[in-house]
Image (cartoon, rainbow, N blue to C red):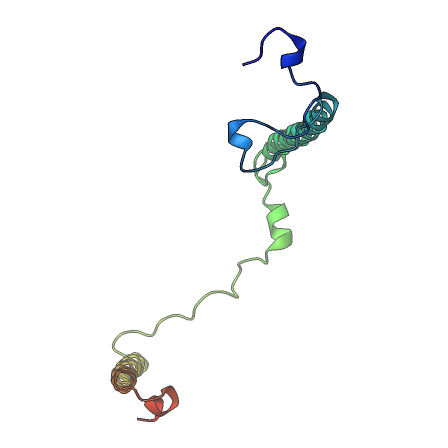
Length: 150
């Protein structure tokens, strides 16, 4: 495009890009010093980020290597330490003995279990009925509070 003659080369340096790609959007050109400073700050930021990542990895490795020595029961099986945190299992948590199957207590317990199961089933059926009624009322376009009163 330009020849060897000095008069054909641009005399002054342009501050704006003159490339075909830059015709629509004006791009300000940086001097070499400005670009070097820009890149140098980016390099410094990357160095700091890399150092912090390296330090975090090192902390993780040190913590992980110490855990095998700090884990409870890793090197010892001294259960006296466990007893300081948990109460003894002597007799407080035991269930009372079940009555024999042919006694009046056992029959009363069976009747209570059956009665509770029937009550639970009845509540479930009633709930399903109310749910169906409410869904039908909402499907018909009834407002929410009125649908719950049906």
